Amino acid sequence: MMMSGESKRIYAMGFAAMWMVVVIHYSLIAGGSAYSFTRDALTQWAVPWFFFVSGAFAARSLEKQGWREFCVKKFWGLVVPYAIWMYVPLLAGVHNGMLW
Image 1 (tube, rainbow, N blue to C red):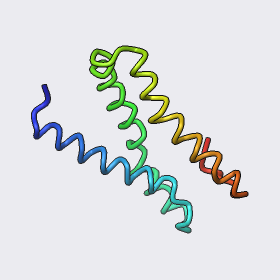
Image 2: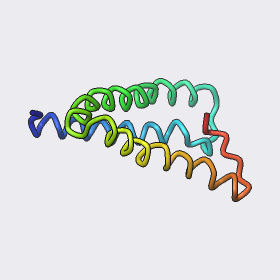
Image 3: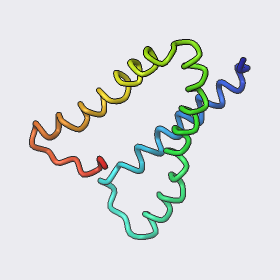
Image 4: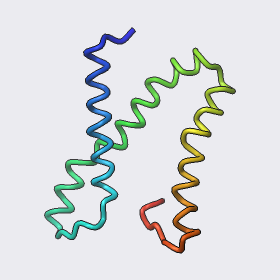
């Protein structure tokens, strides 16, 4: 079982990683190569952090829920929001080049 101090640190790292992902995708800031280098140097850890944490807690989730419920929750929590994020701008006529 995780102690509360560890839980708070994981939450704080997740919060910081969330903001780093926002910085990665925030293309309205005009900057030269020095800005791009600094941004990339400070933010390159954020996405791997989410993959690590997701994998670290996946075994515990699978143990509690089983494969079927785990996959259904992941579908509704990841695939549906992604599809909405991707298709709503297209329907509105806005090209979202940040999706890959």
